[in-house]
Amino acid sequence: MQVQYIIVGQGIAGTLFSYHCWRQGISFVMIDQERRARKASTVAGAVLNPVNVNKWSLVNDYDYYISHALASYKGLEETLNIPLVETMPLLVFHQEEAKKQLFEKQLTACPQYIRPADATEHIVVKRYFKDVTDIANVSPVYKIHASVLLSSWAGFLKDKGLLIEKYFDIHACKIEENGVYYETIQAEKIIFCEGAEAIHNPLFHKIPFNQNRGDALLISIPGLSTQYIYQGNVRLVPIEKDLFWCGGNHQWQFDNLLPDEVWRRQTESALRQWLTIPFKVEDHLVGQRPTTAGQFFVVGTHPLWPMVAILNGLGTKGFLWGPALSLELLQRLDHPQSTPIKNNIRLERLLS
Ligand SMILES: Cc1cc2nc3c(=O)[nH]c(=O)nc-3n(C[C@H](O)[C@H](O)[C@H](O)COP(=O)(O)OP(=O)(O)OC[C@H]3O[C@@H](n4cnc5c(N)ncnc54)[C@H](O)[C@@H]3O)c2cc1C
View (cartoon, rainbow, N blue to C red):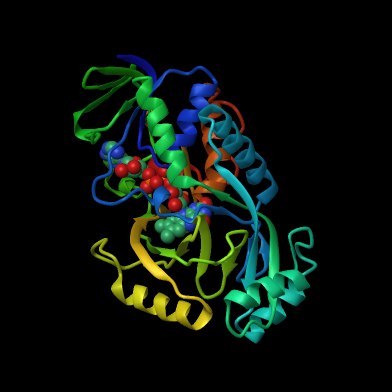
């Protein structure tokens, strides 16, 4: 098989990169297999939110990233003929006085996206939550149907013979000046979209990848309105009728990816204190966010091997950053002299 690109990893990064290739008529083959952990992209809440609700500040370059994100996800909706993006307000409960005061102080920082909840929203929320005092409304916020997107795109690629569901063994890959050779595949370039697994990739061992695991619960809450995302000490994101994603935590020190039972019990207890209605935990998910010390993304061509590229370090914002970054990477591969990728660290400095 002869292709322009081998893409390793079909999380949200590989999905978006391959989508842009497909749109531009660039030939590729995707190699993906979940091994040590579930892909982060199917554990994520997959919410695109303009505001950092802890500081009530605007997410950096939000307008740039969201415009690319909406264009890409809408394009994928049309290609796959399924709904993937939902717009819904995020209702933030001020559970501490200090947070409420910060919100009021910051109202002018991003007035287009935040306001106090109105009377109707208060009435709705008081039916389902205890001790509601003040709530903020953040909108528009977008929810991506991540698992549907990833499985549908995998099906799309499989139908076209473009997906190999196998572990990619870097030690069996030959990288030469005129291209990349792997089993029976000959390619011009290889693009690594391996998520947290990149920490084991010898080509990128100088990049200071960090470990960052996150747990999430899938919870059925019959009766709770699915028109909103709710944020208290935990976040509840509607998935489908009665089913909500609930999460998540950040753990930087760990030696396994087993469900964190302590976090789960704490979360269940917080939910019992918060909700007026019963709930049931259906599943406990664990994933590793691909992060770097300094929390920068890693996108570009390897300075020593121009036929090797990476799209990684998407951290907590893979669904927001992924669309713009994957397109920027594709443009850079086509035109290496074009403008450097926005806000990227210099791979040259780290890898030379
Ligand atoms: C609890 C939690 C909540 C989150 N919430 C949000 C959110 O609300 N919004 C947001 O934007 N982001 C969120 N994120 C972050 C988001 O999930 C990540 O930024 C994103 O999923 C990273 O995508 P990725 O494609 O880089 O990695 P992954 O999704 O992990 O995909 C990597 C893929 O590569 C495959 N792979 C790796 N190595 C190999 C190999 N050698 N051979 C074959 N296959 C290989 C893996 O098996 C996997 O399928 C959250 C993450 C977590 C854990």
